[in-house]
Length: 288
Image 1 (cartoon, rainbow, N blue to C red):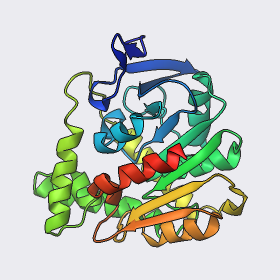
Image 2: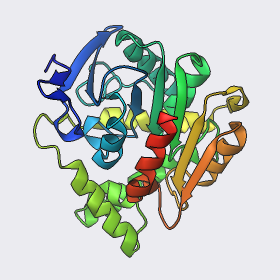
Image 3: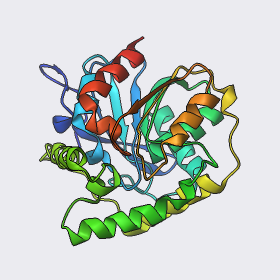
């Protein structure tokens, strides 16, 4: 593990070369990466179901890190972080809070995707003073319509991917039309740009526990999101089969003053399919 946050020539600017570090909090050793200029409020990235540090699209991370200190991390029990995956979104949010406080931050901006967006919502409800700005992509609120069906969709698409020797994300995140197939293959190729110091893949048990937590979130009572005062940017594709796109509208209605972007002819990974349009918008929102 590297201990120097910056290279001799200045801050790390490419996610493909950001060193992996660790920090211990509450008996858990968290693996994380950071890049971009230090100082100011950092942007902490909350990742999706089954994902590790290696699952962030560099075309989203790198443009934001041009102007901001960016931090990605493995939640407890995932990838190179120790411990066992909690079976509730709220417990995952408590772990994220421990990790952020261990790094010494009193305030952060959050960029989240899918399960990460659920964890981010739980974090901001519990610790509103910690979060200054919120980006929620491909996600939905507690008790949201059909969130409890995520496991069924996931297993079906994993089977479809296995039969065609493809990455499951090509099915889960992208439409199966020409544009979607092309975008899916390009996305998976971008995730492979980092060649050294790659993360451990998630274990089957950890993945199954995350699915249980998502089902619980889908069946739990809705939180009062009207209390959220943070500037919030919400984005998704218009045909999200994993976390139905209507839930992005639902979040938008319930979070006063939030901004909503729905990308056409795209699925759960709409922000990755349209990264060239979304990354600048997200960077501007976070910089305002």
